[in-house]
Amino acid sequence: MPHIASRYLAEGPRVGIRHFTLEDGAEFTARARESKDLHRPWLFPPDGEEAYAEYAGRLIEDPAKAGFLVCERDGGDIAGFININNIVRGGFQCGALGYGAFAHAAGRGLMREGLALVIGHAFGPLGLHRLEINVQPENAASVALARGAGFRLEGFSPKMIYIDGDWRDHERWALTAEMPTTGRPAPTTPAPRS
Image 1 (cartoon, one colour):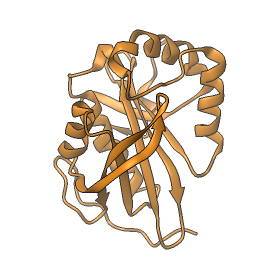
Image 2 (cartoon, one colour):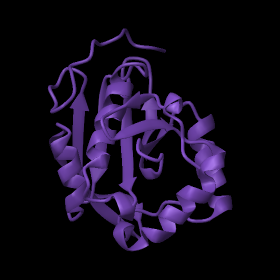
Image 3 (tube, one colour):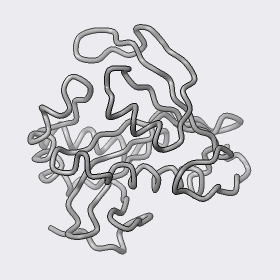
């Protein structure tokens, strides 16, 4: 079912971003199943209705998370997803990004456009000051997306996150509201929210 443009929180030339809904389960899980070869061993999005309902429910209900679907404006198909996890308020105003493209959309620049929209939303309406991305160094596509969005490499953490049966090394990338990025105007920084 096509998604109408008025549901988008922000729009670019080819994609719009919107929040997850429980009604997106059938399309999201079908796309996840089609994309297993692309995602493994980096990412394991839910590929069944029950797992999706639990996953999306957390993104919808937990104030320390914000989940966004990246949708193609031409037809409304879900191209990928970007989540802001571990949102900390107070003096920190930070969140950790996780993302994935679906196979039919990979390599088309749609996630780069979607990530720019999420960054603008995070530093604008959400009032965040810092975004972080933890990436396995071998995941060249994810590293390229972080770098292309203006994130700076801040360090390396051995055995940081447990993924696919083992503790995996990660590079730590970050972006603050003041840092210039390609294709995104510098936002004004709102006062911290508690």
